[in-house]
Image 1 (cartoon, rainbow, N blue to C red):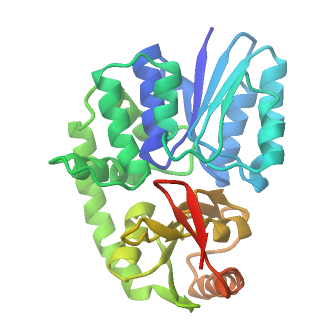
Image 2 (image 1 turned 180 degrees about the vertical axis):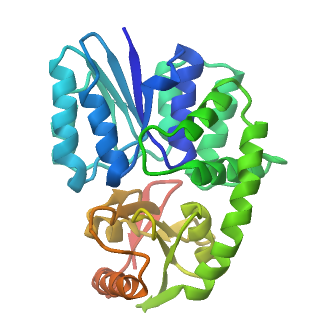
Length: 346
């Protein structure tokens, strides 16, 4: 039996999921491909699945949820793989639409999906497929901190989370086969989580990202709706998490929306107050055919055909988001508490 892995390629959760499979099962790097929500990388990943030869193979899809625009293409790919006598294990922690979950799950031997406040994707891979040991405990602890945007309190650990996330951003591109990201997977899988390679990439990221962050802050558009500050910014070569946290912390936004002008992939984050309540910002993502968690979600304009490098196009996108947010937050606002999973409206 050959094991293959299709994993989210834009953050530590997906990268760590792949590293766990390499570490514990010896999955060769050539059997790993990266995927994201739209664009060339999505089509490349589906083509890879369809071209896996023969039967008796196992495909693990990790840290990746299907949103409506992606559904039909993915369904066709997994249906073909399943009918060739192969098996699929799908492990994800994002919310899914019911009809998508029903359609995809028919072709999976094991499927764990849906909003999960306790475990990220890599933790699901580790707990369900891997032997517990010190290596896996450390890697999944760091990944949990990164994916749930938590602070460690342990010296050096928060910096490690940032370095790994930003290195992944620097190495990423819109291709399912990315040799540089695979090199990082290999380093993490070897047990060298804080590797020399990763640290070198992080230094390169800082040189590129710092001036871009200054420009993002200068050009940031602020939408004010019913007492909420919603930041919308465009940029390139910046970690989506770092861009959003800048908007939330330095620009005092309640909701941050960062859109990559290169790929069209976009992230939305909400600021939590002292009681850990945050605005349900996933409603914006859903309105734009995206999805995600209540306080961390996203959408993609990668297949829209829009030239997001042009200021006029950016202004049009901002105006569309303004209309959406005015409709969503013009009256009572829904808040979510991540620690308890509780909702409130006020």
